[in-house]
Amino acid sequence: MSDDLLDDPRLTAVGLFFEVHTGLNARFAAQLCEHGLSPVEFEVLMRLARSPDRQLRMTDLASQTSLSTSGVTRVADRMERDRYIARRACSSDRRSSYAVITQSGLTKLEQILPGHLALVEEWFTGRLPGDQLATVLDALRTIRDAVNPGATAGSSLGDSDRASHSRPRPEEQSDGAEPSGDAAERLVVEV
Image (cartoon, rainbow, N blue to C red):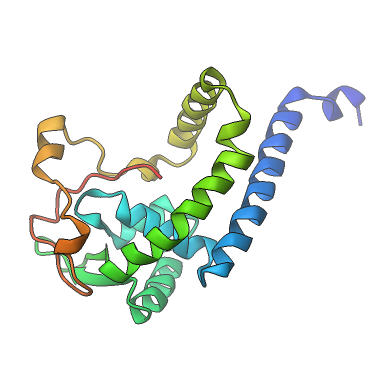
């Protein structure tokens, strides 16, 4: 095998990316474990909390996470049992259902996020000056959109449509409550 192939900068780029991902995941997983959540459960809560009406179709949730459709169902079952999310039927499509974050899920995030953001700052964003961070974020979005186009499902709504789908305040949504509004037109927000 040629040394030129082994020294290819493309291998270095993807190798560094995976090393960073692995290192960050290890730090984040330890902190999340202290709060009784797995990294994927935290990701589900974040995706839901940052989405309009604090809900996503189960299929969109699967597209935006590292889970298969059946995997997201198993995680949702566990999280529903723990009262962090609720499921609600889609009024416009009987085959679809929505995962909705509950007040208990929002409270769990409020407990986790200060420590999580401190870790993000210490090990990721705080290590890059503002212009470098902006460049990295733009590059990550470009790559993400190419390799996982489902991660932005529903983002084609215009600004006026986004305004009409405002999220309820946490105090307005109790455990198991179903948000109002037409669930067929939801916008997905990046984590």
